[in-house]
Length: 332
Image (cartoon, rainbow, N blue to C red):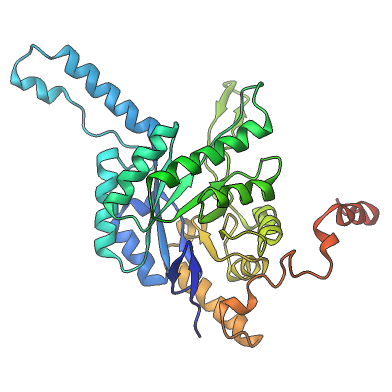
């Protein structure tokens, strides 16, 4: 059964994409993902702060050892590793080696901190051969003076500047916590975003009551988290020219089907692959095929968006009336 789809203008053999993960920094792991059925892979994010921190350390050491013997070169530290274990100089080489080793698209991921950083590193990723770039915009508006408009303008400015600098497809990984997501989606696409990834999971720290310290932790997503991205994809599908990628809560083939029915062009997963390994992709693909066969769907395009807002006969279910109904029935 053909499962082909398109994402960011790229032709994919099926709608399953292995999203950014620490394990994706290893070529052998990427090969296993492809063998198991991944239609594309997203590399771990490259963080601008990590790059600049290394530059600052090198400059400091060079300054202090300028008049020392040639042995001073040994003072230089090895390339620092980022949050995913990928150093700055290593990252571009990872793109090149992944492109050489795989037959599926390789999507780079960039988490910048300044407009110049987004532009500079995006250009480097394009030159290294990335099939596309995912702009992983992680921004928490702590400043009390920032307005919702300020935050959304920040997203738009990043996309505008990056699009002017590169020609390969761009996806934007968004936070759900913006004031008017449909309007922002429209603005981002108008500025050159080829796709939207819904959603970026913000870190949610806890407090240690014994040490009175903030505990930072990364928790793998679960199917319980699917509702938020599912509803927004359903609302956006068919109403924006940007590709839609579903991210968060994908554990079973049922989750894959739900996201496609909502209108996703591709379904991304990381947590399930970290739990079960690359072979889990075969189970997801197999379950999708069985579901389609039982219901006489001949292609992914036939089922995509069937449950979206644009094609719904009861659009009110996505808005205020549905909330009131839940309150009336005691389901909150």
